[in-house]
Image 1 (cartoon, one colour):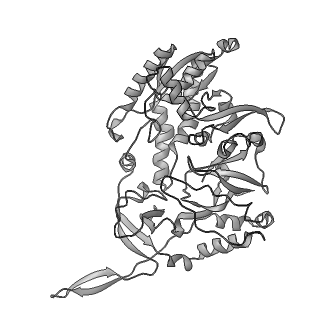
Image 2: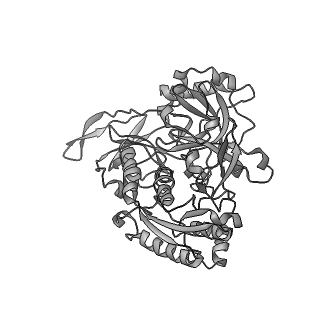
Image 3: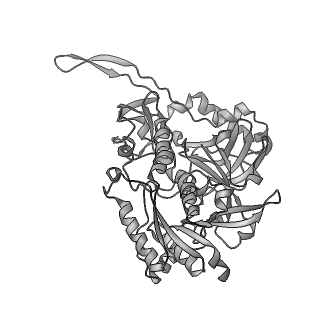
Length: 478
């Protein structure tokens, strides 16, 4: 502990219980600790509460620092946050993509702008309340590397949010609560009588708060009414792309695999399924034999181009002439929306479409034509995909020493959203991008989101939960 007194650590104190306990533990371990609270958002009109949530958070954070006995500082990074996170969000939504602001905030603000500010104040390290672990190891090239491991709490692992960090950023970072589970963090805070002990976890967009997303986006994106088109199952039977995907995946099956799955398994809205099979269903040799063109097409989602013809008819006693759409075996116009850019694949809420037995989900958004395509039920074919592509310029390796080269194929575990159970997949590196072929189809693969890949940490498999015995190696924008 004595050797820690000369190491100065800046804790990003947010006013929440996680960062509070992180600061407390570092102080108890003998580090020279100070707190830095960052304000990243001013506009309270976009939050559901309509309050300046950051003011309350700052007040709590200041009380926590006083309770622990560490210096407290404040920095306004709202200009950087708007330029590097919020403007990027607007731009992505305008293109029909769905960004992850929390990943961006960590890459651009917490571990860049905030880190630089902390260093100016004399910090050797920045510490946060993320549920993940960092370890030092010797890489494949013989050099020391930072490994980022899943947090010990399988229900709170936040490594995914750090999937865009670099070795330089990780080398200056500490995660004090990565080995602790959430209930224990609460207990430590209560025992130390920290003002944040019973504070609820923050929700919504990082540093903005819980928002009504369409209202938030309408600051820059204008509403524009368009059609909502429901896609029937018959569409897929006659669609060339869906047939190509199905036939190609079937051709890749190994001799031991008897049946191809095209639909994602589903339990409920708040529970995901961890797909486990006895080995990969596909043959590595057959995957390797695919051309770049075949892989590229396999990764493309089904496109929708359902055209509706009108017909005139006479209605009522006076035989008033009216116009209606002819019945179409592939789909039907079932409603209107305020702008395709306000919706995302897999979305269920906010569609306001009735008359269906099962829930309605967004399966595609056409920004150019301003059309939203929807499907009924959790097993709708449009919700499931098995392959995705990451463009060469979007591939990010945390472990540069493990970077894949064109022609290489590896088996990793992947998640495409926070808290999704890790999914077994094959990663195929080609000149035109990195392809991820999942063992089982995935629900709601969304352009603009991040896919992060992990490798097992073999020495821990016997002692930890399977999803926490992994190291995150890299990520990329879908």
